[in-house]
Image 1: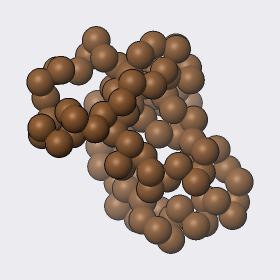
Image 2 (image 1 turned 60 degrees about the vertical axis):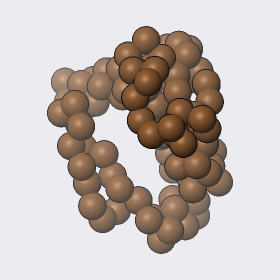
Image 3 (image 1 turned 90 degrees about the vertical axis):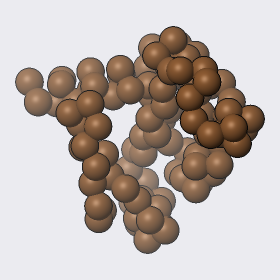
Image 4 (image 1 turned 120 degrees about the horizontal axis):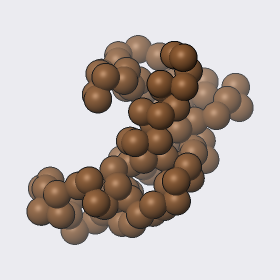
Length: 97
């Protein structure tokens, strides 16, 4: 994995095609983070994003979340676990405790 960004105090990997290929070959769990509807601004993002986003449910807490199918399509081959940012934070905190 190359570049990382920090969001809500958690480091997220920015992945590229090579990272996706390696993850697919390794069979390791992949995670795709989404934002809960109640935590998102319904008018936020570009008009294009608002038009294409869909609603999915977090695999952790089962709450409704927004998903951008365009960005998700890049890693869909990994069949990632879809979790909201709150569940992502809880996982990270559990790993550090």
